[in-house]
Amino acid sequence: MKGKRVLTGILLVGILACTLTGCSDTDSPKKETEKPVITLGSDSYPPYNYLNEDGVPTGIDVELATEAFERMGYQVEIVQINWEKKKELVESGEIDCIMGCFSMEGRLGDYRWAGPYIASRQVVAVNENSDIYKLSDLEGKNLAVQSTTKPEGIFLNRTDERIPKLGNLISLGHRELIYTFLGKGYVDAVAAHEESIIQYMKDYDASFRILEEPLMITGIGVAFAKDDDRGICEQMNQTLKEMRQDGTSLKIIEKYLDDPQKYLEVDDLGY
Image (tube, rainbow, N blue to C red; front, side, top):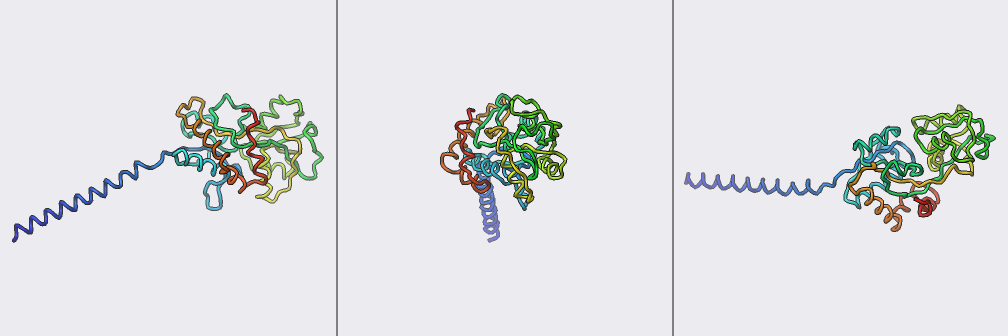
């Protein structure tokens, strides 16, 4: 009897070991099926990318990127970056791509691009009581821009004959500061994406007037390092195109912007 009990105990231990091993084996495929991560760098730029009340990244670009990369078999991680160092970060591989209302105009040779996926107007805004109504009225005035953005280049280079000589061009590291400078009268005008200005006015109950004459109409894209040959950029470009065609992009944009269809008119931008 004693021998039978010992044998039974050994069998039970063996069965238990096999059972536990079986559980371990069934767990391993879960790890194998986890999606690879794409690290997307951006700064705070409502309504494209910002933190909601719970501190979670949200916005047009966040939703578009999440949907596109999911279709491609990736999960996306949104990280806040120093916008002035974006090129350095993507080239070093610290981030995989840049997506934050990023204008393609004048930068086509600097990155590998997916897009354009949205059309955007770069505009000038002034206080409501300002005597500035057209771009030529900016002659001798002080204007603030976010540093390393397209408006900064437009006013620094003045390759467009419509752009007058300013009194001072003030470049600031953070987007919100340009509107603070305008509201307090430190500058006469600011220049930025139209959607960003409208969003700021909504968020802070501010009253600015946007000039009818735009600085430029540009395409917004996703930037990868120029030497990134993984094929992700090309796949992203095709996926974003499919999202415009199947109505997904429209549904996302209309959550944040009025007249969303006009932002999807990218085919005639010439990229």
